[in-house]
Image (tube, rainbow, N blue to C red; front, side, top):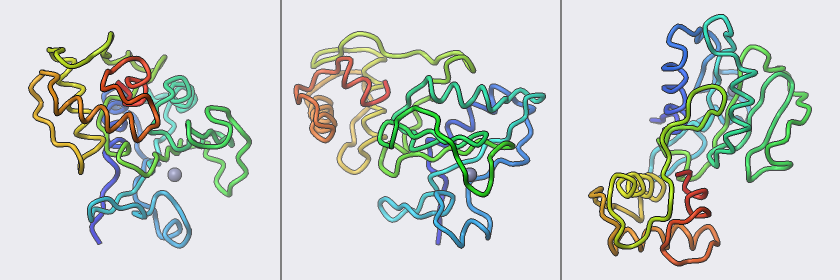
Length: 216
Ligand SMILES: [Zn+2]
């Protein structure tokens, strides 16, 4: 069976490697070892979309000397409130993302591995897991540039291009927008689809709530 790690996790790894090029990767991992494969784990390629199987978790090695302090990474993930987070485990604590119990609050974690040498991140098993939008990591790395202001039919410019890339990444089977920096009818329809699925007002206008939904 062919599998790959969900793209959003590879995006985060790339950002962390850029942040700390010499960090240790001794406890990094995507696919589960044999131990993992015998139990239910996000490290197994259990989720599939369009015939492709995905692993939806990655571990990141705690290496403060090498530039990646997982205390800081954990804080940054909490502060970033990224909708791709399913849960984080670090240092005997677990924190669910927006869709889980007690979102963004640390709770005691009593699993067999205390997770003091690596941080575990699971992402949500839906199209968002395949988004390569840069992760916001406040306090750890400088924030990537973000779209500001409202985008609507008739808007033009690179912000619209970024919106089109996001929509293509999030809804790969319903949306295939040309990234042309022009907010036309097809882009509006794609925005409406995203809004409808999320239960937002379906107006095709990208304001604060829709931006938050799309992690723009
Ligand atoms: Zn793990």
